[in-house]
Image (cartoon, rainbow, N blue to C red; front, side, top):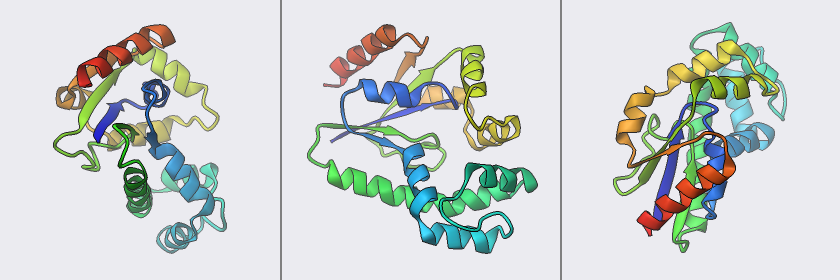
Length: 189
């Protein structure tokens, strides 16, 4: 099985591009959303480690934002609780798709959480900063403080780019990006 991992900044278009490959995609953001909506163990751990913010399932984004803004270290506490659950979901996804030729991994902190394996094909999604910020600002729960904290968790973009085998320049034009994806797939296969 070939594992293709997409890396880049928040809002660079990883999720959109991951779908263009036409292979099974593991989307860490969807995994996290499922965990926040259904996982009682996570709720219990969050209540214990960060009291006063979480009361019941589903865990609400606004409560997460309040907890993160309240104390600098809360984002790390939340990550420590949630990331092992995402890893479990990733293992299940890999097991379920073990007979597939390719899987695509859309995991924002892929390199930061050392999820990469030696043979993984890492693709850096390069997008214009101004366009990315415009798109992020349109998101429902946009919060500049949270965005800054998420960016602090990430490796510098230059390092991600150097660790990548390929680069896709995302100009947010589907046809242009799709041609890049097909070109890379032809090289991989």
